[in-house]
Length: 336
Image 1 (tube, rainbow, N blue to C red):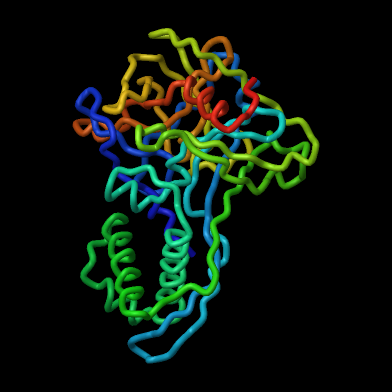
Image 2: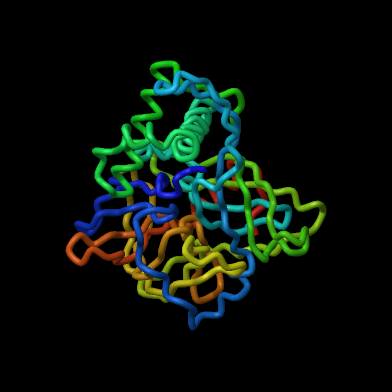
């Protein structure tokens, strides 16, 4: 089992309006609840919105330094990170935020959007295996390792990371097999199978060096045409927008939504165009569509803005829809 809070990462990618921007697509530190409903006619876009999750599985061998025994641990698939996405092509192409699928340790330590390689996946499987072993096989060792750790989610997560690194360094843990899997879920898939769930492949991402927090996924549609989102490159200041997504604290088969106004352009230091909206979103919304009053997608939700003074989410930043057009052109995907 994997700690769900281990995917909640503080970022310092942007400095806009003297607020701290934090990733909102993961489990962990609680974010403000999304505003239910919307006065705009966005039902069509809601029907194309899906949830996105990534998890790890494999087998791990652990050498217990206390009992001097060696054990094999099977890491069954468990969701590790959560987000949202939306279908842009009837053949099963889906846009989401890249940080939902990226290496969370690189995101936290270096503020870097980094695609996971095999060694990264191996490390996460070993961390999961160690956590399972400590909880179920040797809680006395767990107590010794973590007895002086403050009881906060961040401190516990950091302590588990340090323990994993230490076990790897001392040759006490190794992976025999390891893999990462991505699943897309939601009513938008109901014409394909009754479980409303499909395994997805990561086609690619935007220019992560410039902070383009966008990724393209593909699911096998089995010949069934999926509903598509309409895309618009037009953004009007102060217009109403609606953001759709699947908050992690509400395991619904249909997305929730939050409404607000488009407030300002907020480019990052690399010149990548984000926009600020007053819509309040929560964990799991990352990668969801930002929709204008013409029922068109104008961007991909990236980050929530945390106001240090009020200690609440004060708004959201989304990546301009021009980057949807850009990533589709990059990978030869027809865009509606």
